[in-house]
Amino acid sequence: MDRISIIDQIKKHKKQPNLRYALKEKTEVFTNLLFYTLFDIDTEVEGNLSQLEEQFDGLVDLACWDVDKSCKAVWYNYVSKLPKILERLNLDAEATVNCDPASLSIEEVYMAYPGFYAIAIYRLAHELYLEGFPLVPRLMTEYAHRQTGVDINPGAQIGDSFHIDHGTGVVIGETAIIKNHVKIYQGVTLGGLYVAKHLQQTKRHPTIEDNVTIYANATILGGETVIGENSVIGGNAWLTASVPPNSTVFHTPEIKIKTAPNVS
Image 1 (spheres, rainbow, N blue to C red):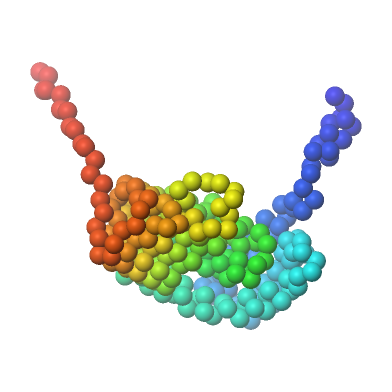
Image 2 (image 1 turned 180 degrees about the vertical axis):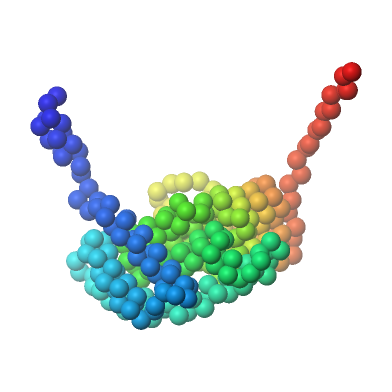
């Protein structure tokens, strides 16, 4: 096959008219500037909001495929929510510094904790998700996922003072509901019982009530599964049914130790 034929074949199979990776790259730049604007003390706020609006306009040009919907109005609604988002994120940071004995300062939480960063990008993306802005919220949380190993769908509903410790391998599905003062550890999955396209509009992921702690590698599945308030879910537990309030759930593996005799 000659060069011209190869080019023609590639063009033939490029079938997605809206697939522009510039949207992904520009979303990452927007996300970084937004994060710094909210948290970094040396990053100016007023001028950055104008720059963010300009960047957002570029995202609109790439991602607003519905010509009958005014995506421009999304920015004005969104920016008015930023103070409240920041207030909630400060509560998340305080929850982390209060929960983790390894934390040396709250500044360390903001700068070095992957769980906090993932929560921050989730909260910033979630409000855009609620505005119905296509694709960008998903790109924002996937950017955080790549950096932290924490995969939070922007559609999830998460209450105040949320803490993720260590973070790597955490998965929180689109229809999960997490209430206030919840703590989860690495490897936790809040997922669906099974995957089928016809379930798209149904609640597929669990509800976690107030003051629940979920330890490493626990898996909780199903839209009807509710973990009652003040419960503790131990590491490696596998749950597909609800747990009453004030419960402790634990998995006890069988551990055998075989020691070789001393050989002289």
